[in-house]
Length: 145
Image 1 (cartoon, rainbow, N blue to C red):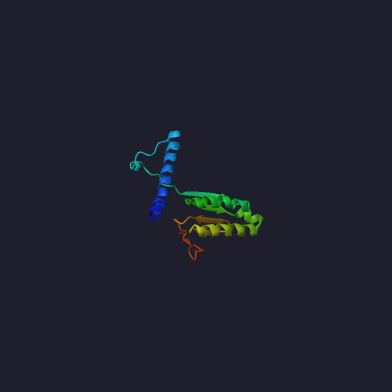
Image 2 (cartoon, rainbow, N blue to C red; image 1 turned 90 degrees about the horizontal axis):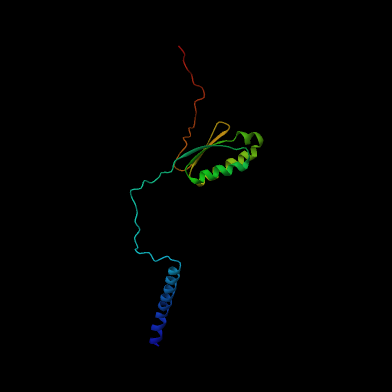
């Protein structure tokens, strides 16, 4: 009984060796050889390119234009300045849907979203923050002499 257990345990090793031999023959047929070493040479002298930040203006003329804005935001290096006036003049409900979609994506990307005036929305990725002040001075007095 013990002899059977030893042979049974070694049976998978024989099958594994045969599979390896078949794979080596197939590799040799296609002209690729096994890697000669387990080390990869890395050139540390090369300069790594940094991703540039893109500030891109968008105009929402219809609700489907939101998808282009979202695609740029998902890349992670785009600050979007969105003009919503054309869509707002057509359909306010579509504007609300578009803003909700932009806000949802900004929240998912841990970014910021803010409106400026009646027709501009700015959306930033996580590395940038929009300074939102509670009160903005409305009347500025300039003394003339």
